[in-house]
Length: 328
Ligand code: NDP
Ligand code: GDR
Image (tube, rainbow, N blue to C red; front, side, top):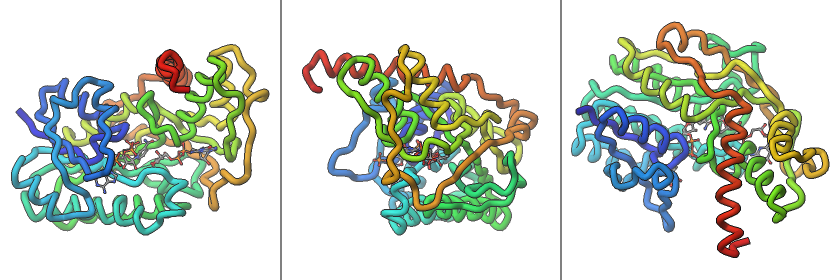
């Protein structure tokens, strides 16, 4: 039986990946940072909280990582931990760089110090392309990050490449474009929209205030994307792969699809407020994942529309339960 160690196991991707690996017969060990209110709602969603060995530790604490690797001797490490909200990274640039950037280096260093045969997956991001240098981005597109988050992810990406090249480690970097699901955090734009659509259609909200409606993203489904992470570590050599759908939609398109699904016109409910604009915006992202398709046999299975509708259905059920309990 293979053992996988996942940092960021309580996040969106952590939950999908843990479920995916448990279904494949893995022993799954998950890192849990000490918080005043630890929440396992995403693991509970899949009913897998008790199937994972949860251990306290933090990616900013190298000693906790070394101890865990020595204890559990994993075959594969997936570094998903991050301060992952781009907007917050301007308010907390140092924390973001410590967790998202230095945290990744700590994971690589912990593996190097413990057993450099352990395979490492680093969760890199399309935010590294930022102010895009080519209309469609692939593994050879030059980077131009536009936020402290993007800069810290680029540091982590190059560290992963550097550990691969200088320490002969199996360290792969997945440059994943935006991916969403019913487990997406409520502050990200897709979930903010689908949650509002559920509330507005159930009569407990009227308006939705968003920021820049013209930004465009290449949105996929998290459940599809965690398979690509795993495939990267089953490949015969470590490498860098773009994972995307190849299609880009604006926030307006997102609103249109989402409100249409419940028979509403988004223009009657959505307002754009400049206070929610970012100091530097990533205007458009669109990825080319041909390399992942040809090398790993990975293709996205879920369309943008299917994903948005799946999220609205889940939000409707949750909001209906809240209303029934009188929690509105
Ligand atoms: P989430 O924000 O949902 O999850 C982040 C996880 O990191 C949470 O479990 C969080 O724990 C944990 N974490 C935060 N700080 C620390 C720390 N100091 N030590 C240990 N764990 C910590 O992100 P996603 O699941 O959406 O994304 C997973 C990874 O992929 C992230 O690295 C993200 O930056 C990257 N990524 C995501 C994309 C996306 O579209 N979702 C696209 C490209 C890359 P807690 O909840 O307790 O804070
Ligand atoms: P992103 O996701 O920054 O791409 O990072 P997010 O959903 O936060 O923003 C996408 C775009 O929507 C615009 N926008 C708004 N965004 C938010 N959050 N809230 C709003 O009200 C709003 N209105 C408009 C933003 O300006 C932006 O252009 C996500 C994260 O998961 C990262 O961790 C990951 O690396 C990247 O995706 C790929």
